[in-house]
Length: 130
Image (cartoon, rainbow, N blue to C red; front, side, top):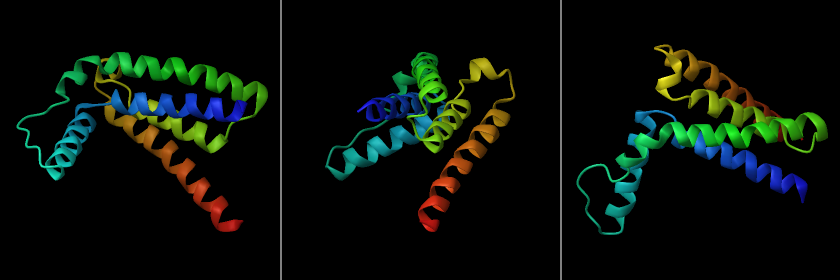
C-alpha cells in the first residue's frame, strides 16, 4: 500500500514537471489536444492550452514539492523503484523552467534526458534478463 502511494506521488511529480517544462512541450500537448478534438469532430483554431504556459513555474515547483518527500522516503525506506525515481528526477531536471536556467536550458534538457534514458534502459534490461 505504501509503495502505491509513493509511486503515485512520484508519478504526479513527473507529470507536473512535464507540464511545467518548456513552450515546445506545451505546444505539443496543445497540438495533441487539438488532434483529439478533431478526431471527435470538434474543430479548434489556436492553442487552447496556451494559458497554462504562464503557470509553468508553479507546476514545476509543485513537482519539486512532490519529488522531495518521494526521495526522502526512498532514502529511508527503499520502498520505491529506483528506476522510477531516476526517471522522475530526470523529467524534473529536463522540465526546469526557462526562468531558472539562465540561458543554459539545453544543458538541463541533456542531463535530464540522460537520466530518463538510463532509467528506461535499466527497466528494459531488467525485463530482458528476467
